[in-house]
Image 1 (tube, rainbow, N blue to C red):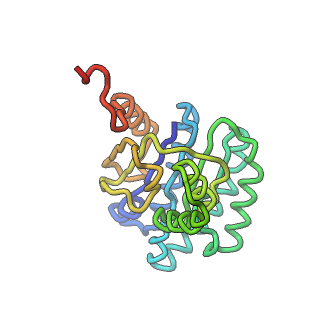
Image 2: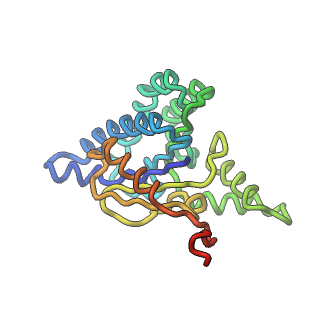
Length: 231
């Protein structure tokens, strides 16, 4: 099962408490750790987290710098935990605009966790699905006959995805918003969507389990008609 999460609401969480937005991002990082552990316990095969979109570069420089520092610190602090829990880490998205120190942290984490088989943790940083699709199209120009599976492989190349992730089964978005925000547009073609009103720093294992329970009650037909409805 592939679960993807749009982690929305860090800034609003901080603003509501009279705190700087950076405080919300710090609390959000704690929610990431708890959610990763909850997903591993639940037997999720792939977990993709939307950490920083390509559009987020438009935020104030101080906030962007703070986020990049948090990403780097998270990778250094959590890599050992991921190794111990056999969780493979992979950062997807563009890398040509990232700081050299962050790139080294990404490469280190990916290298040290490469043997993880319990769960594949993908963190989207400087990610834009539209950009990835356009890059994959450029790579596909040489092919006369391209299958969806082959195109997804080209997407993986464009995204620096270390291993095939498959399509998203369940997409969760926190923060009360109901949009995809340029996240995994190709992979979410048939994803079940779950929207949670809580802000990301308040997201708990109980919220995660509620999303899984909601998903378990869905009927996924992929355009077909189920036998009980075909009469």
